[in-house]
Image 1 (cartoon, rainbow, N blue to C red):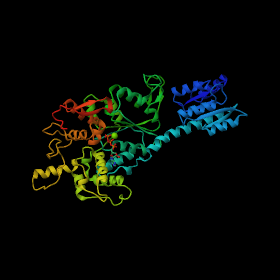
Image 2 (cartoon, protein in one colour):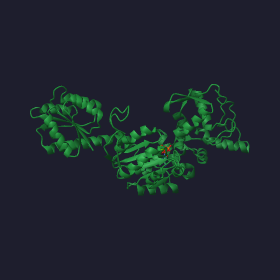
Image 3 (cartoon, helix red, strand yellow):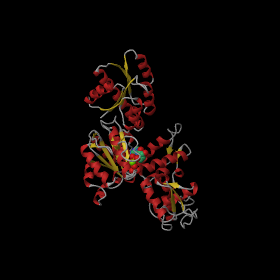
Image 4 (cartoon, rainbow, N blue to C red):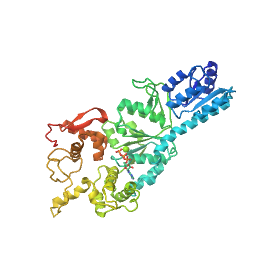
Length: 500
Ligand SMILES: Nc1ncnc2c1ncn2[C@@H]1O[C@H](COP(=O)(O)OP(=O)(O)OP(=O)(O)O)[C@@H](O)[C@H]1O
Ligand SMILES: [Mg+2]
């Protein structure tokens, strides 16, 4: 429901206008002076303001300026008496949306308001769309022609036009968000917002107000009313990422909303109705989460109307050459873009690697290689150690004159080459994983590491990064300073495993 603020020092006018607009189905708030109007502006999410020009104290013109200082796009309609049209025109020059002359025709007023609201909604949605524009995910942005991917394209084509809830599962970096966007942009909702929420990134109470919004004063810190993602996604698509991380109470609330498309803001009693398509994603096996009692089965079935299961990259290796070329083109700069090639040896290494971080990891590997390479072709030496090391390890085992192939993986203390286990596995001697050793190297160079650094360095989710860093804290290798997401990890001085 759209909310209109009317400002006029003549109380009769306020009453008449309020009645008229309530009848039209708007929510109406009124004020008989400019200062109070600004207070209201802080407490309400408004869609349009109608203000009288001549008022004692703050007049319409200076109210307009104050409003635009806070909300540059909010449409303001000026009301003015015959004889002061110049003032109204000046207000329009200063950014007023339109003016109407008193006494006004009801129909004219209604029409002007409608236009202002439609305009405002377009501006707001446009802001989202511009952000999304470069990312207009048609299917041709999704690379892959393997049989599994083709089945996925056909599924997306079928399900996109409907309003069916879609559950996308797959390991980290397999392209879940990419698919979610493709579903949205190929649906009739494509011109409307695609709003995404990471359910794993926020604590329960914050996530609740993020999803449903809150009224002013709903909790300490809620200084003004805030629309939630469900409201922002009206007529569009809401992408609920990492859905398995949602707490049980919120799962109950979400289930109710999915069934009724109706909810209240936190601290509010008014029921809001929305039209939202929900796409959810998880890198966990949700069936297992249900079986183990961590995820509600009724919610699972409600989300799992259509299931898109993305395969890990190692299970569709025939797509690797296509993806490599796609990312080469993406990252190569203007001059080299047409002739940057990949050396067959490098391609073979890429094909051999097991890609625990899936397409995201491949993308990062190619981005790095494009920077390191000689500008003509990407060679084996431009690839990171984890991609080249399995060969070194294999060669060492065969001990058949692997020659002086540079050892790609080192223990930080003595730099002796060791065969590289999978990055998540533990090394027999230190009990640490290669990813954790890499973090120690990072700390050596930078003094500390954050959770985000760790996840980027190793191409894993921040959640997994947190697990592995916490493990190092628990075993006394690192200590933690600060709180929350920005906290830093440093080497514990007395640690037996920390070299440096
Ligand atoms: N089939 C594909 N074609 C082209 N690019 C892809 C493909 N799959 C994934 N990518 C790219 O890989 C990166 C990771 O994809 P995305 O963010 O969709 O993965 P995800 O499954 O959501 O990962 P996470 O679980 O870690 O959030 C993105 O930059 C995306 O553009
Ligand atoms: Mg994702």
